[in-house]
Length: 165
Image 1 (cartoon, one colour):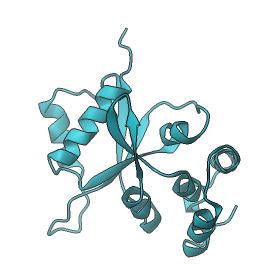
Image 2: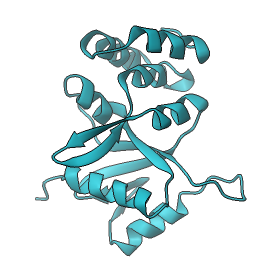
Image 3: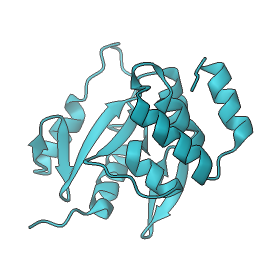
Image 4: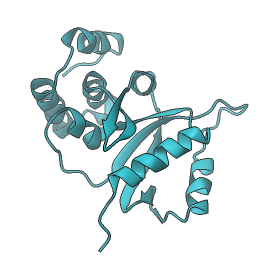
């Protein structure tokens, strides 16, 4: 049995940035919440990415998948399995997601730098459009109650992106 290695995934993600295959990244979703509050069950590691600007407006993760193939990381559906961890790379899909990546906090994980979406942005992303399910609203409320949320920043995000509970 392979024991998943979050550290190995973090090293690989940082390598992607160093290789300039991504401009920047931030851990999002349930794994990001773990850095700010109690653990939440999750299947995978969501990584929001800003891709390098190119001449085409077409978004392609092909360079990331080629990088994974070179390193013999297995693919499982839309995930790249790194150190036993299914990692899903998600191009920043909205202005709020782009802001979440740009304003992510660099934290320490076992001596490794890892960029993590701040709790205020995690809440905003959970309240955004089609993502706004009952479960995500519950997680957002829990995050708001248990994490050190800057209410001024959160209110600004809610107002600027026209979000609601």
